[in-house]
Length: 255
Ligand SMILES: [Zn+2]
Image (cartoon, rainbow, N blue to C red; front, side, top):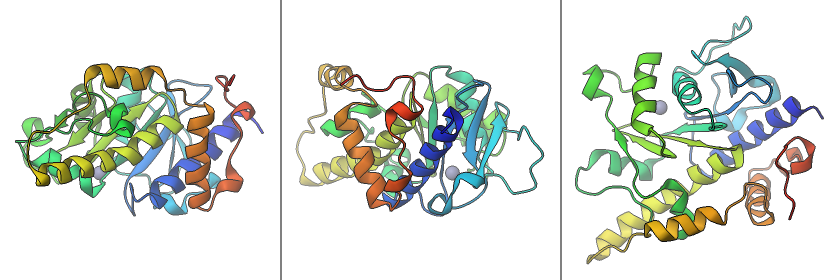
């Protein structure tokens, strides 16, 4: 399989996993930077992620516009991906979703979303919150143009995830596996924090040292990471679509 073919296959798998893990439903999307052209990215046409197949993947530029004539509808919020890829050259994959457990932290002013469980370490020490109303006033809360998306990317800065007030989150990572992992564990970390607060008392967050130690030990194609990817893909009914790391990735595991 070609490198592009393998990346498209991984993108399809990512769509199915995020749907199966209930990070996305009818809405929400995942994208990957084009393996041969850093000024383009791949994302599904406007379709529920659970239903996405290889033929549904379209190629967009960093203004969120299709590079070929496209008659099918595109995601209204595709600009989120374009702006993050444009602002962050090291980012290879982006997710935007409305996962319910993350929403309270974009609304309540009193509690920041911070890492409290080991698998939540990849969200970083603290998650910034972007409020579309600050610059754009009363909107329908959707990110429907590049100006709004660039403002969101600015709030994200160098972080791996930003919450969007009353809407959802945007996550960015160096690979599809990483951004899927981050997006699956973000709501779980949020849920654990909400429940811990209900129990009362002081909250023990992961320290910066613990977060650093977790990140140092992480490799996107290690045996441990592949184990989760394989598990999620099989659970989502698309284990047969998996491409082994050596099929299309330059950074295939050495372990
Ligand atoms: Zn949205």
